[in-house]
Length: 199
Image 1: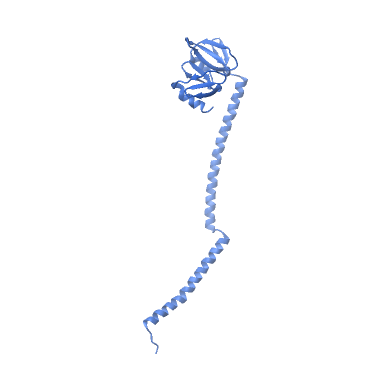
Image 2: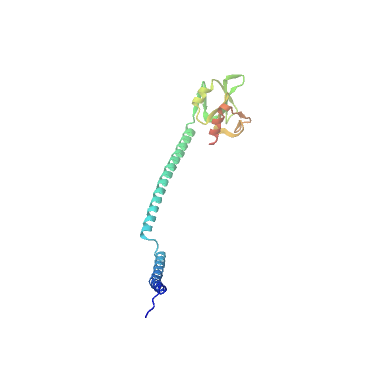
């Protein structure tokens, strides 16, 4: 007669479970190992490739937009350069002439203009290419109206040609070929710094 005990039943159940699940675990491990090796050599799945392709298409679109924007900026810069060169050629061929009373002067020849110390209505014109000084009875307003943007009033009694600007130290500026300093008043200091920062 077979003696069946609780312990023997449990033992047999564990043996059956071991016989069923151990091979399943081994087969599962082998399957996933084989799948991993297969994917490693085969590459990415179709879904992964589609996702990567979508990402690359998005990046390509962004790069095209950036390229278009850079092209627009470059075209604008080229147009500005062309316009400046054209204006420079026109200025060289047809220099700006200002007329103050009986005085006719090419503006590019002017180094600076200043009021006479004893008569503020008299303005002395100093030149870049000549030691001669021309004097005219006028105010700065009609002079500034005719001068191009390279000229600037720096205090109540002086206008300078910024094309002739050499350097500045504190409240003083120096012009090429002129052996004296020009004082920049508080009223014009901000504008002067802004304009000379581009020189």
